[in-house]
Length: 216
Image (cartoon, rainbow, N blue to C red; front, side):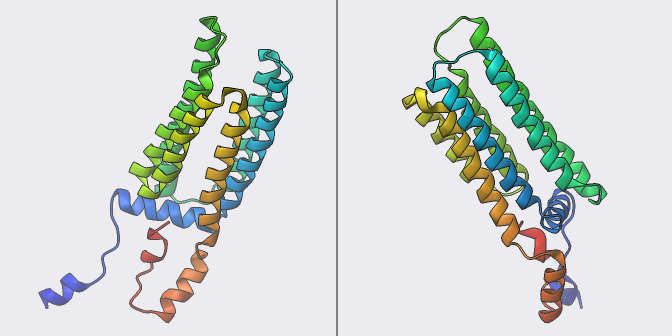
């Protein structure tokens, strides 16, 4: 009898349960499409920044509005996709994720301000953006899945490319983010919807319901 109890599948608890719930909500609400849309919009904005840079335009009055539009569009797209149907566990962990990336944006703005206030001609803040993105994705890896280390390493290499080709920094950074977000988005979209997972569990009784979304 004890052996039978020990062999029974156990539902995740604590942080594992919150991660599983957030993964289920992300797949159900098609967050992958939102990430893909944000990635392409970000690339478009940074291609405009690259064109301005090639033309010799360094005016903050031109770049700051573009960055603001990029950020506002990302927030609107993601907010529309997130909705309010997520459970309590998903909302709690989602708040942690939001804090990580809000901190990222604050530090990005700070690095630009410091670069300008020091009067340096070299725009080193672009390299710091890649380093900060590396940290952000690494945090996602420790919270969710070690697979997030792939975009973390990608962003680290992006910083090296920007240091090697500073005149191409905007399109390199925009393309790198686009690839990272599209990769994550496509992975989410390839996951079975919760209803499909339920049918799969019905066909395979040995598969516990929580296991269908635990890998997201």
